Amino acid sequence: MKLLYKPFAVIAGIVAGKAAGKIFDGLWRLLARETQAPLAMEQNRSWIGVILASTLKGAVFGGVRAFVDRAFATGYFRRTGVWPGKDAKPQGD
Image (cartoon, rainbow, N blue to C red; front, top):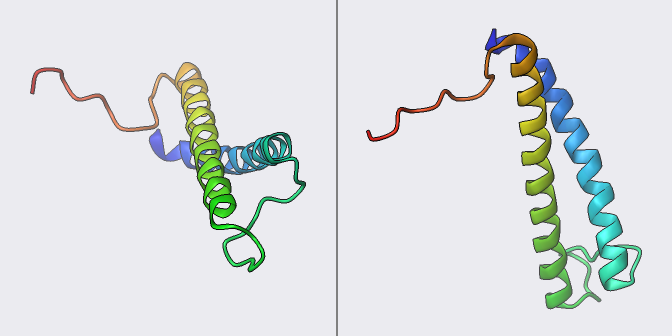
């Protein structure tokens, strides 16, 4: 039953990537007042700007991915009764 979750995981990854990209772009425009975040290989950008943009992007993508993965897994569990991830380990071991 867990194998049937794979297509949902792929869809969740696509949804998370698209949503995180939009959220990051909006946050960057709001915080930096620039339309494009700096890339590491752009010579005319500052170190601080590049590092801050990359850190913010990583945090947004990580958080959105966790949210979407958890939401898809919860929905799958409610419909099938099978948790698609790792089973919980007993407490106290």
